[in-house]
Length: 126
Image: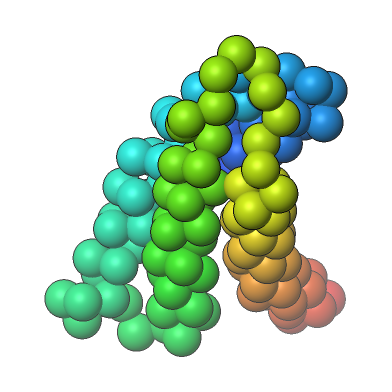
């Protein structure tokens, strides 16, 4: 969970740095985010592959993590040959936005299961 949050934080900071015109720090934030995202995705896929996770939501979240990694990797790779503080190519920005959308979808799906559990606990407590 910590790796996912750290990855999301790095990708979000890269997007904000790009928006502010600081493209070089954005690139290095993405370089750090790539292996963290890969480790987080593999960590999420592990329990599913060995059969210890039976929740459908866990499978969906792991699949979304696995889909985000290639977008993040490609979005980072297209920035690599740029010299100085040149703006990233459009495809790099698009990949970054796709990653953010996938992370937002993960958060939304996780929140939709947590909130009903809390509501059920409150309603059963009455």
